[in-house]
Image: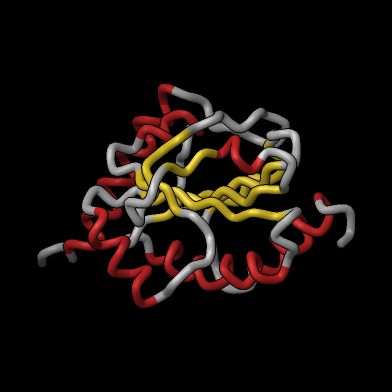
Length: 170
């Protein structure tokens, strides 16, 4: 019996993330989010976390080969559209080694928020990422207030509650 290539790839990436995370402890609520500037997935400039200081930021790590990530993206897009742009920002970090795969997915499922491209996986190491997808809800001062590992249908409601709390009930 031969293992399915997607399953093999997901297993290898999970193992790689575990090895990378072994060198850095995973960031948790109360930790300051590391500043970063990475090339935009669409090739138009850079995505810088510091550009959104003063807003509540939902930082989402995703990849085209990650099935739960693909479930999350439309839900995250709904959240982005639901909250005021002057107070809330979604920022994504794509971990595909071949950016064309991520771009192909986004051509079919467009998003209204920036996605950085990190094909070498530098940011997962900084954040101590140990699960895909993982997202971080960051307050206006740059402090992580909520970490969400994995994604399944219905998780959007919990995230909506957390975002509202950080926005002051808006």
